[in-house]
Length: 172
Image 1 (cartoon, rainbow, N blue to C red):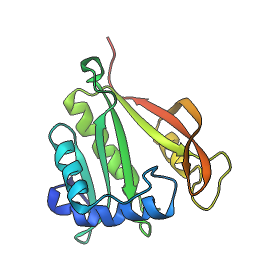
Image 2 (image 1 turned 135 degrees about the vertical axis):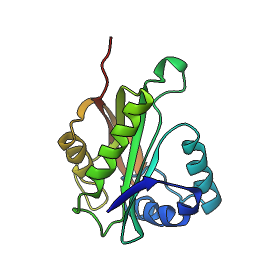
Image 3 (image 1 turned 180 degrees about the vertical axis):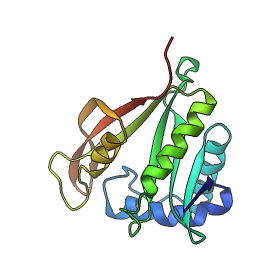
């Protein structure tokens, strides 16, 4: 297993991983798969300021995680939002934990003090969404700090959204 910085040359593989989440789950609240050009642009924009990491096994990218602004105002510059996606057949191999550990180290080096995750949350678990993401984040030290009710509709069903946070720096 190897973790490295993503490049725009990874875009096709990362988009292939992400497509499953857009088309088959309510984990992503996007309803249309972005084009390869759009997705490549997202990677390039993120890399200007934040880490965008991939995990590889035997040269195959099995997942990715990236950080982005929590809010656009300068006072929020010590906080960021995280996202993570794993190839659907590669879950349970420790890739997610390794990606987030590497991400946390990189963010600490940048002076980031707060990490946030915006997570789709089912009102009732169904074939499109479970509470696995919340459990994953909780296991890594995140705590739930907010919930928005019935704020997203996908596949004709309403879903909640929760915010989780992990404080990684010393606040003085």
